[in-house]
Length: 395
Image (cartoon, rainbow, N blue to C red; front, side, top):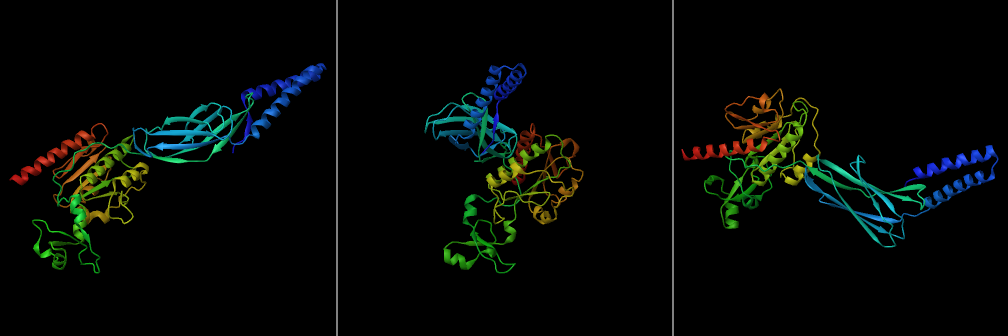
């Protein structure tokens, strides 16, 4: 519930009334004093009328969709239902804590009559934004007073980072497992650290010594044991989330790069682990094992740079050595910390928003991570990688 105040017209009438009263007093003219008193009475009546009016409408807000990418289209539909006959209303719907708002005028409505309005949500930057509360302004028939009623309903919209269409990673070490293969894995509770954790169907080339004969006899087909090492990711995607090394819009370009690569890895069916330099795993569910595209994008929509200057990479050293390492960074002074995570001769793809400050080597590929050149640089590098892998297999 808001307060009641005089409008600009009301303040003008109040000033005129005070002037009439003073003039009537100085000149001894009863007519001028009477006009001033009538103006004061009109203001008092208008204020009482506006103040005692009940909330004339109910408002329903519909957000479509609740999740959108930067630059996408999101729409808010408002429906106003009049409880009784209501005058013309001024409706304001706040966005992003009131920093921006949509304003429009609803015509006078009869009882149970509906009014509709719509507006588009600005999606020029990522984040989670609150929509509301809405306010309804009521004025008296003379437009002398105004009352603001707050409707407390609040909705949320999440603006995720922009996703670029990338080619899949080719030639990554380790076997690639399809979605059908993952469904075929049967979890097995481990009672000791050295016991296996799951069973899956036998595939050509598997070690015969890993066949689990008891399960094979029960299921009627060969089942192979998988221990903890089989669950380690094929690719580790490391996001340098420290504020050092970024300037201007480079941090947002890095967010787009990490989101695009992460989504590409998850959609291609490769096992991957997405971590930050602060030791935070991105996109994992409550169990802490499976990464999800939706969770990853929601986290990247609100992630902010870390103030730490030294990365926490020790927990991932043994994991990274088993697969491909992709690092998304700016131009940090300690780039050697990242490349040292990979094993000797293991491939490293370095996506940098300042590629001119980093020199590539035989084992480290440096790609342009800026928005303008990222997609072309990535697709070219992956096409070259697949070509090299095919030639290696042929030889």
